[in-house]
Amino acid sequence: MVTGSSYVLTSGSGQSLLIDLGMFQGPEVDEFNYKPYEYDCSKLVGAVLTHAHLDHCGRLPILLKNGFTGAIWMTSATADLAELSLIDTAKIAKEDRKNFLFDKEMAIHTIQRFKSVHYHTPEHIGDFIVAFRDAGHIMGSAILEIEDTKPDSEIKKIVFSGDLGNTPDDLLHETEIIDAADAVVMESTYGDRLHPKEDAIQVIEKEIHEVEKIGGTLLIPAFSLQRTQELLHIMMHLKKSGKIGSGIPIYMDSPMGRTATMIYTRYPEDFNEHIQSEFKGGSPFEFPGLVVVGRHSESEAIHREMGAKAIIAGSGMMTGGRILGHAIYYLPQSSTRLLIVGFQGEHTLGRALLEGKREVVIDGFTVKVEAAVNDTQTMSSHADQGQLMDWLGPIKNVQKIFLTHGDDGPRAALSKKIAEDLGLTDVILPTMHQEVSF
Image (cartoon, rainbow, N blue to C red):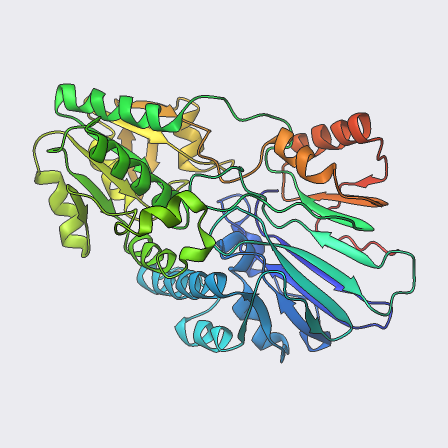
């Protein structure tokens, strides 16, 4: 499944290292978050985090009540974004009065164990040597090269891909290629398909022109990390070039997205050369006509604003956040256009709308969908099958491959592609809680 990522790697010496501890996201899998965490965390010499998306970091606070006493290693940008993600998750759980994994105090205690590292600088964590490489997925995201210094088999170096980026990315450096590994644990989100070749900028420009014609509203549900920043950067260029009207307001209605964007600007060195050059003229995420929405009352007030407008709001799969209030109000209107710009998990509202459902239930309200619903997959922050193969192919000496973080269909398709194109047949599709010994 494309959620809840987590692994424990045990050395030949018996020491163990945790890689990610993600939250399960989606109504069909949410229950897994609340099942007892069986692993004895006192055995862990430490933990490492690939990036700050909740499906990779969202359960980290449960470590502390399960005996964990070590540090949690990650890049500096990931540390800042993961802090934001965990605090925001605790806040939302309290406001919604739902079951929660952790409160703000637990989140803070977890954040206090964060230890920042630099890309390419090996860190010794117990009997492991860990190097972080740029994954090009979101700001601070990392591929992990982990060497077991006391192995009891020929498998000594294991690479964990984390989530690989849709490289070359509009904002970030290209995904780094790894020289060699004995085993590779690799994501497979889009293991069965290629991203379409359409231009996301042109898609967004067209959608805005459509709502301009009829005085309608363009709704764009967006993940707070990476996708919101990409959208703001695209809007900035469209405004600057005059390709969309200077008068149409662009609302960024995502408090977490606003803070994440501020964090992004702290790390200009993590952007590609194009964005670094843009920083010389100011923030690449600001432009005339951008309205940054703060309080809930300001969000609701957008509904009273007449005329064409675009609203970027969280969350990306429409499983929560302020996009839901806008969906309830705007989806019944034929002058509304909904643009999906990211992966939509099974059983999410975003997936249902994308698949053409014309009546949905949102926060207890039955909503008839009169809006036009479109999508663009070119903005995905995940590598497609071709990019996954381009990343895996150059890695020398690979003996075993584990395909994770993907639905069964994409994993099977990628496994077949690896065997056919690379001649690597020892490909494992692990299941939850499965243990594999080398």
